Structure formats: C-alpha cells, structure tokens
Image (cartoon, rainbow, N blue to C red; front, side, top):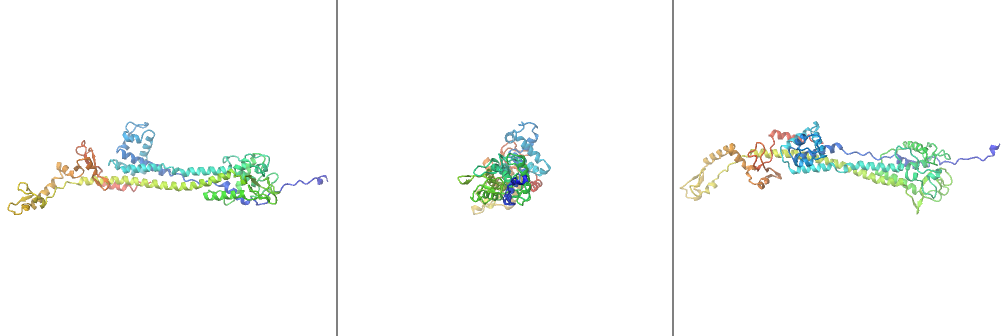
Amino acid sequence: MFCALLPRISRAAAPADGVNSKLFDLLCEAMTMTAPKAQGPNTKLQTNAKHTALLVSLISTDKNALLMLKQSPAGESAPTNLKGKIKEICDGKKLQDCKDAIEWAESDENKELLKLLTAASQNWPLPPHLNDTATALSTACEDPQLQAQELAQQKLQREITAAQLGGRQPGAEFKIEGASSGRAATCGTTGEDPKAGVQKALAAVLICVCGSDSSNDNNKGCAATQTAQVTYSAEHSSHGAALTTLVAQCGKRSNSNKETTEGRLAALTANLARELETPHGSDHKRGYIGWTEAGNAAGNCDGTAETGKGACVYYNLNNDQVKKPTWLAELEKATVTAKELASTAAAAKAQEQHIKQLNHSLVELLRQSILNNRGHATRAAQTVAQPNKLTEADCANHQTNTTCVSPCTWHEKESDPNKKCSLDPAKGAEQQATQTSTAGAGKQAGEAAATGCAKHGTKNYCEEEKTGDKQICAFRKGKDNEPEKDKEMCRNGSFLGNKKFALGVAALVGFVEF
C-alpha cells in the first residue's frame, strides 16, 4: 500500500528508431574510409636505367673504364688505379654505385648489354650525344615525381585519420577527450563551445549521436542494434567499446570500408557541413549535427527525446556563423590532397614511360654508334687510291714535245696546235692497269690510302670529313697495327672487327630492353 503511494520514477525516452540513420551512413563512410593504396615507384625500372646510364657514361669517358673498375682493389674508397674523369665519376661513396653497375651488367639477364658495352669500348671515342643521353636518363631516374605519389598517399591517410580520431593513434583505446559531468556537457550544451573530443574527432560524434546511456538505454536512432551503455561523464573505457560496436555495424553499409577519392571526399564533406547548417527546433537553431526534438526550442544534446533535446552534438555559433569543427577542416584538407594524389599518380606513370623511352634510345644510340664506326672503318679500309685517268683534253694542254709524255703521243705533222699532243688509248689503258695493281701493295698501298682520312694534312680538314653529321676521321696518334703509332695524323676513327661481328652487334639491341 505504501509502495503504491510513492511517485512513479520514469526514464527519459530515447530518440525514435532510425531518426539518425542517414547521418549514421555519412559517419560510417567517414569512419571507415581509407586513402587509396599508392602504386610505389617501379624500383626495378629505375635501378636498371640508372645502371645503364652510368655504364654508358663510363665507357664514353674512357674505353678502359670497366676494366679499371674491375681491377680496383676491394675496400678502397679511392683506388689509385682510377685516373682522370673516371676517378671523378666513381670517387668516394660513388665508387660502390660504379661497381654495382658492373656487377649488374655481368649478370645473365644483362649479358647482351655487356657485349654491347664491350664492343663500344673497342670503338672509342664515342659520339658526345651518347653521354648526353646517358646524363638525361640518369636525371630522369631521380625525378621527384616518382616519389610524389607515395608521399601524397601518406599525407592523405594522416589527414583522414586526424578527422576520424582527432589525434588519437589508430589501434589505441579511444576515449572522448575532455568528457565530463554528463552527456550534455560532453556532447553539447546550448550556448557553450564544444568539448575538445567532439571538436576534433568524428569518432566522438558517432558515440554522442548513436550511443546509449543509463538514462537512454535503448538508442536505436542509428542502427537496429543499440550499443552498450556509455559513460559520458569522464574519459572512459566504454567509449572505445561503443566505437568498436558502431564501426562493426558500419560494415553492413554499402558505402563503408572504401578507398576514398577526391569526389567521394568532396561529397562527404559537403553533406556533413550541410548537417551543421540545418535548422533545429522551433527556433531554427543551427550548429547541431544529429537529431533533436522539433516541438520546442533546440536544447542540449543529452540523448533524450523531449523539449528540444536529442542525440546530437552542438558546436555553437560565432557572429551567427557555425564554428567549424576541426574534423571538418581536416576533411577539407584531405579533399585537396586526394586531388593531388590523383595528379601525382598520372605524373609518375608518365615519368616512368619517359624513362623507358630514354633507356631504349640510349641502347639504340650505343648500338648505332658501333655500326656507324664499323661502316666508316670498312669504307676506309676498302678505299684504294684511284690513279687519275688521263683524258684527251689533258694531253691537249701540252704544247711541246718535251712535256707530251706517255700515255700522250706527240704528232709533229698535226697542223692544229691543240691536237699535236693526243692520248694514246693503248698506252693509257696499260698505265691505268699498272697503277691500280701497284696501289694495293707495300708502301704504295699506304700512299693510296692517303685518299682516305690520311689525305688530310691538318686537324681542321681532318675533322671536317663527315657523312651527314657523323664525323669519320680523328686527328690522333696511332693504335695497335697502325703505321707510325707515335705520330699525330688524320686517321680512321674506328677499329671494329670484321663484318660478321658488326652484324652480331646489330642483333643485340633486340635483347637490351627493360
């Protein structure tokens, strides 16, 4: 009887089922999104191209470069056998790069390139544009664009995580920063600025909007299954447990657990910003995110469904402008970074294609320089001094019997003075045959070759001997098997092997690709 007279203690009603369902969709997308996986740089392509560029640069500098490096003592940072420009290229820490390149070239995978380099060393000096292309290839391999995609992806993931957890580390137990006094104090009280937790972290927003508590223990406004009760009066372990439950429920949503893009981030950010601008209560108050009871002036976010209150977060106004949450600013930054990520991915792909093209060009130029030198050497070797073929006009120039000599014949009785000395066809043919025969042997063969590079007596004339833009001759001292080795003179610029070897070189380029 006494009990019947006591007043009935009633519990506040939680929000109606599903009132925050659409917001829950947005929060789920935000809490489960990740940055797209970055396609890292093609390190194999870069390494191979760097080795190729370095090897060609070395062989362009000194024909004995590879041999010198192979013979340099192990463990020395500045081997004494390295001279001149080779020492500059492979000095100190760079020495290991040079040795790594040689070791790479000697592998079975790259033996065809090594053959090509060996052939090039026998045709020295190489044309300057070969080294220029090698330098361009080496520079292309160091382009910052190749690393930019990975850096942009990491930056994007940091910004996403900052919006989600507000500075808390992924995997660490989450607690709402600054939680105190109760749900309204932690999640939002009309006229007051928000606590740090809901200001910084979408995770705190999710717990405030979707969590249950001791007074509102049946909050199904977000999902069909309520969370365990949350203690909002302190930074409590129940926050992390509630977050785990809610994120698990997010997994059932089609927009959850996606790699985000600029477009998805822009739409998500705009929708969440729109929530903050949506009027609440009979007084159309802005700055809320989440549901509030509409029949009264908008009130505190204490989780009840009465007198303008609700399951929500409040951010307050400043000069009639909603105070932007930090998590929203992080999402805006992430949207910009996502755009950067897309552009860096395209730039990195284009740069890798550029490296492939340069590498192909370098190998092709190396092969072509060998073939060109081989062709020049062959033509020079086959060039035999052709004796001047005397003509009738040449004989007619002689006006006296003493200067009219064989194969010209003097005709004293001829009345025309321009015909007294005329060509004897028989003697002309005989002399031509004799000169041609003797030009190919002994000393006269060397003299005949003077119609090749050796015919140029000065350096200027020597270096002007070209086929198109390709220089044929070089003013230098002799090499093995060349006459007068110590004398500087105009000589053929190349000493490849026989024709069979040149054809073999021509076939190599088909194998030297990366």
